[in-house]
Amino acid sequence: MTDRDENGIERVVLVSGAASGIGAAVCRRVAGPGTALLMHTRKNREALEAVAAEARQAGAETELVQGDLGETGTGADLVAAALAHFGRLDQIVSNAGMADRRPIGEVDAETLRRSMAAMPEAFFEIATAALEPLRASPWGRVVAISSFVVHVHGVIGTSFAATAAAKAGIESLARNLALQLAPDGVSVNCVAPGFTRKDPTGHAALTGEFWDRAAAANPMGRIALPSDTAATVNFLLSREAQYITGQVIHVDGGLTLL
Image (cartoon, rainbow, N blue to C red; front, side, top):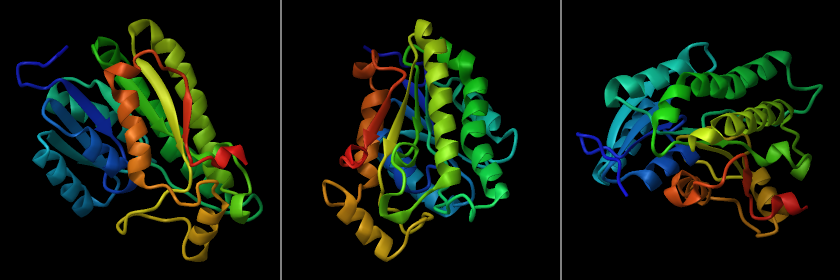
């Protein structure tokens, strides 16, 4: 089954936070002939260019966009860029975010506001702008990257209060969107990774001994790789996953069993 347009494109995939980590791993995993990628980064342009080069080598087309999703309008701009460059938008991987491990009492209100703006508000803005393109797509998919911190609290003495609140907002919005788009055959799901190894070019909320403690606390005894989550995202974007919607899939090595 194929839905390639006159340019040979079968699907256009928007990936936010694509310069490193899970976003970059998703781009590498889905890249191939017939796939076009609208790849976003806030400021890491050099790393994004490198990931885009890998995607093109695999046969994908790419378009790169830079912008702060914490600023109103950036999410809608990403959708507009995909439509302007490729003429369609079929799939969204909302990955961009930030992590702050301070508990209530230490984390400031401004960090909470920035977290909400950059994550659930940005997801809301992207989804709102993409409603009609998704409905028109024969292969509509939305995957939002959540986090274990919504579901497991206090592991290795970390709290992630602002991040947990923001990611919980994404999960709630995704469930609402799943119900709204189900009649159109568009699936919407979340993937909640556990502690995940960061790329050298990416920001890490944990350093040094915390990574060792996180690995020791995990039932599988290791930190996840970005490719672990990317594999699950790739499946949820596939045609085979068409009947899965409104779910939160945990890719955490059993962390949520604790």
